[in-house]
Every structure is written in structure tokens, then in C-alpha cells.
Length: 325
Image 1 (cartoon, helix red, strand yellow):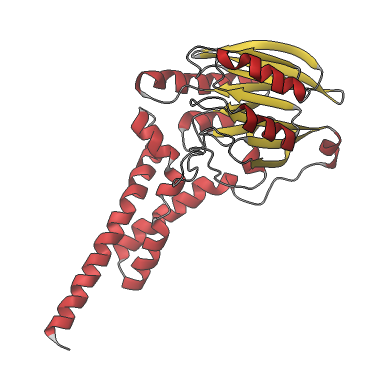
Image 2 (cartoon, one colour):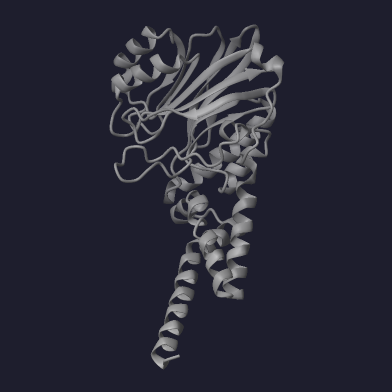
């Protein structure tokens, strides 16, 4: 074999090996952050939010390592693949069974972060017409939205509820329902006050609370983690359906603590795995981050859960059909 061909083959193998290690770098970095339990600032929080996607290159790298017989690369890739599957496992199929008794007491819940660019009232009207929710949760509601919002909600029978508006809009939010309301309050947390309703579902009480944590950015990070941990503590004493924009997912330690309080993600309960909800307003970038959730306490089951088409917001709406034992 000519020397030039041998040399070319060596160069190609080395290039492939370099590309393999380069492809593993994002996976190795986020895996290290996840294992260390670091949630110390915006960069690590964003990295963890991207973990399900950042670790995908480990799969083709594992194949490459097997074909080129590179043991070190193969071992690193295999460890990353195993960690990825382990961390995704709670949200992977099969879906949880739904007791037949739960189908006798059902309701439809819709959640939407209306976004910082402004409320798309026409889009919201289409969403409500299509999904016919019994309970609606909205986040990032500004005072200027009140009149138009009240009109469209009343047109869809969502006449009872609780709205907290805020000039900063990030902490404005509300809950509305067509069901009988047993109680309504603003629940206090370290960084916010969130509306909380208890409704009557065919003779059974159900408490629903809207959630919108501060984004985990620098000085706001302490409120982000403090609110998630406070939710976990409150959940153990007063179980409720928590719904909204948590700015977090299962790869963030405070969110995992919240799940350990006895909550189940509705999307995971239906076996949907990672479901991106943000950003929903980019032409070339699909929703990658799973920031919005419907979390269910014991005794509440997800009959169905999915994202609805975008309605002018940078977040996708969430729809959950719930049943009560």
C-alpha cells in the first residue's frame, strides 16, 4: 500500500477521533454539572435545561468508537449514554395506568405563559374554543390585559377566578374556572404570591395553584430555587395540582426535590418523555427547553397531556385532561 494512502488513513482516523471527543464535550460538561448537583447561576441552570439534548451526541460517538475500536472514547460515550437513559427513564413510556374510577370525575386544564411580547387575545380565543378548559392558568399577565382578558374568558364560561397583575408582568398570573369555587387565595412564597383555587369536580374538591418562578438569572437565582423548595414543603402539607412556567425541569436539583414531594409530571405520566415548551416563537429554532409543567399529587391522574399549537407567545400552551380518584 502506498505510503500516501497509509498516511491519509491515519489522518482520517485521528480526525474522527478528535471529532468524537469534541462531540462528547457538551455531554461530559452537563453530566458533570448534573452529578455534582450544581445550580449556582444562570449558566449552569441553562446547561441543565439543555441536558436531554446536549447528551444526544454521545450515541453516534458510541457507534463511531465501536467502528474504530477506540476503547477510551467508547467507554466515555457509553457512560454518557447510560446516564442519559437513567435520567430520562422517569418520563419514558409506558404511560401510567388510569383507574376506571378516575374517569368518572374529570376536568380539562390549560396553562399558558402569554409571553413578554403581549397577549394574543385572538390566539387565546382560538385555544379556548378548541380545548374547552374547565380550569385556565395564565402567567405573565399585565394590568393592561385585564379588560380584554375578562371579556374573552367570560365568553367561554370562565367567570370565576383569581388574578394577580404586576407591572413587572413576570409575576402576574391568574386562575379561572367554570367549576364551582370552594376557596380562593394568594399563596405566599419567598419570591412571589401565586393564585390558588379549590374547585368542586363532580362533588370532589381539587386544589390548583398557578406557578411562575423567577428565571434563574444571577440575583434572581435565590428566589428561583427558594420558591421551588418552598413549593415542595407546602406540597407535603397541602397537596395541589401545580401548573405553569417553572423555569426548570427534572435535571435541576430544586425541581427534583419538588417531584420528590409526591408530584408526578403529567407529560411523564403519559409517557411522553422530554417535551419542549420554549421557545415557541422562533422560525428556525423549535421549542427545546421543557420549562412548563402540570404536576399532579397522589389521587389525580393524567388521562391525556399534550402541547397545543403556539398562540403568539414564546411558550407553547399545555393541555391536561385529569381524572380524580
